[in-house]
Length: 207
Image (cartoon, rainbow, N blue to C red):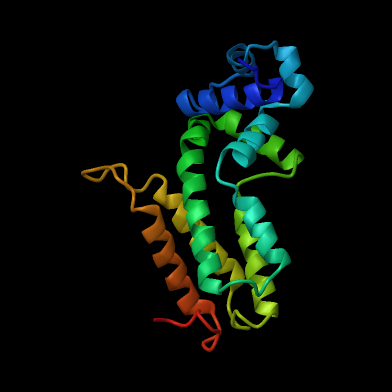
């Protein structure tokens, strides 16, 4: 059987350990052992555990950032409702899969602080999806599909916040089931579009 490249094995092992024991307890030594390589070999590909965490998010989870960047670069494509529905769907799936990985950090204040400092140093962090969606909405605003008086940052915060909350808000319900992602994304996007889009934008008016 063909052996996967070391970088792929490291990412796979990191993803699995971060899911099972949490980011706080998934050490680079344990990740390297699970990947079948030395810790020194791990550091040939990743400068720190924080960088490895970011790579797991960007390469093993739903690709939210590329979607936002692509839409912001070419506003006016598709319908606003359709684009926001896909953004909400990808964001909901992203947080559903990333929340169990990162949640353990919040139990250890000092580790969380060091992790935040490391993310700042490499230009990453959980604020980026909000900024990315804000950039897309501002591009659509300039293109005339979002109302000139719309608060694009608030709109981005509402959509991304709702998607993030879906990851944990339903654990204590009787079934523990989250709202189905496709229906959830459609409803969130439709509601947001009703508040920010230009009324006569084809395909984006309220039903």
